[in-house]
Image (cartoon, rainbow, N blue to C red; front, side, top):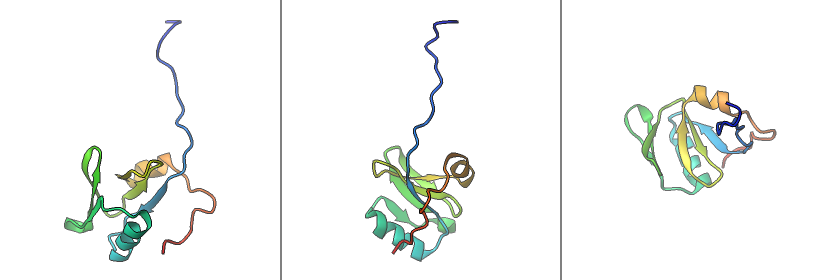
Length: 97
C-alpha cells in the first residue's frame, strides 16, 4: 500500500521527575512535599502506594517508579518499563529535601 495512513512516530524527548519507591516513610514524605500532592495515598499491604490518576487508582509496589509528568500528573511505572523508556538527565541527582 503506497498511500497508507499508518506512519511511524518517535516519542518526543521529555524530562520527568521520578523516584524509585522504596517503601520508606521518609521517601513518601519527600514525595508529598516536593510534588505538593494529595493524589498519592499511602500505604497498602507490602508498603504499596495508591495513586489517584485520571484513569483511576493505580498501585506502585516497592521497586516501581513513581513519575510526575510534564502536566503534573503522577503515575506508577514498573521498573523494567521505566529503564527501557527513560534515562537519567545529566544533573538529575539533586537531593529532595
